[in-house]
Image (tube, rainbow over all chains, first blue to last red; front, side, top):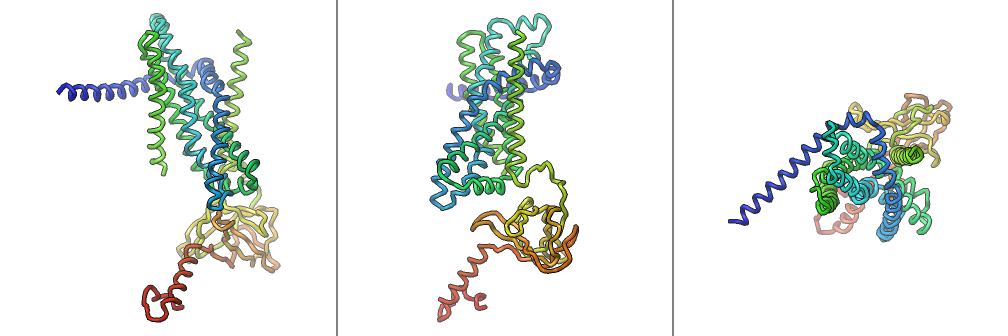
Length: 255
Length: 171
């Protein structure tokens, strides 16, 4: 009996959380246009979320591309079609690995800092002080951070893809000796604009999801050291699961 | 303070520039059929009708003697002659192509992408915008070749007494 009611309350909790995040999304979206009136705030967040993630994104992209090159070469040469390595690496990066890994890295690198920053502002009553001065904290603190992440993730994913393709080329052409002409021309013949668009749309959706979760968790964190830490952990875990779930749904929708 | 602000702006600018450069590379350079900035560079269109275009796609190269002279601009089906109608856009530089030339759909490599190869004819008149290539060769579809091969094999083997699957392979 008790387990039944417990389960019911858990289900209600989950539903309530989904509803709360959706309502918060609407609230943030409503403040996005006014927030754009102060581009300096948004610019600062693009810098924090994007420019400062550049090194980790580029390094990861390079290594992911190189691993793709090695694994792809090993797999394809069993069928004697190692010239298709360019296509395999480019499609894998553009459609899946680029958007997904960028979003996961973003959640770990920038999502956590967004969440703990807002959580700490809340814990030190800065948000309450803003409200006292009739300044909406969602407009001045939350919306610029959301917009910053939303703008940064697609750009980061595009950079990740380019560096990844370069990494695959480094391994395939420079180390394994595939003809650079076949590598590039096969890639250009088989990759279509549709594939690139799919990747871009995915990264836009992931960017919105990761930024939203980070600001939501930070804004609603318990105002204690413990609470902020827990909220940061929750940000990473929920972002990762949500990104993979959304990835499945988007892939199914695009097929 | 102003110094810190300036370095932040420069960093953001660099990041945004890099991001858009990467996006531009992905959309214009990677797909051969992608957004092309100078699509309208002087070219003229001719039409070729094929019985079967196989896996030919818009954006596929048009070559002469292996040199790229243009690309496939549009593919449609012409119900008046029941053939595929392929519009080829050919670079102005290659204006002197005899109008009895032959267009064939070929495959690069065994399983590669399809392209259109033009073999020049001997006429004194040249192709111009809107003219149609009279002589065409369809794509060779490997699956149908294999089917024919197997049909031949089984008809040879079964020519004695067995009646399995040899009904239409006698030709």
